[in-house]
Amino acid sequence: MFYKDERLALFIDGSNLYAAAKALGFDIDYKLLRQEFERRGKLVRAFYYTALLENEEYSPIRPLVDWLNYNGFAMVTKPAKEYTDSMGRRKVKGNMDIELAVDAMELAPRLDHIVLFSGDGDFRPLVESLQRQGCRVSVVSTIRSQPPMIADELRRQADNFIELDALRDVIGRPPREPRDDDTSTEN
Image (cartoon, rainbow, N blue to C red; front, side, top):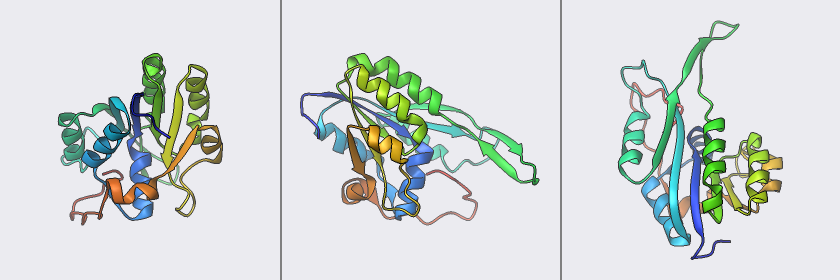
């Protein structure tokens, strides 16, 4: 439930939201997403968190990051770290949980409602702390994927769970066709 006069902020875990939408078979239209939450309350800020591969000649996420940056989203990025696992496979690590948590805690005293776009159970203590500060917290993720993308403990802690699939007609668009050189894990 949203109230028109409440101050709200969006905290988007980019890789988690991308994975949830992909599992449901659609892409997010971020302009529509922003407009939807501007209708629901007084949107103070919309944060988007993602790690970037800095040494890649072409990064499939770069156009999205640039677009979001120019269209009212506060971008929080850091370089992803590449490593080789014990099986010799190339892996990428770029967790943004701490950055998201710090920003949410800092902004909480000036907000009434926080909308967290993530299903990561690591955010349960953050949600609990934000609630103790007087913020209502809604979590957007999905239980309709196999397996569900929302951690049960996060869903239980949230004041409100918003099923991402229920927003498909409001903020979704058909998935784009991948480019030949597109190896993105995020869109």
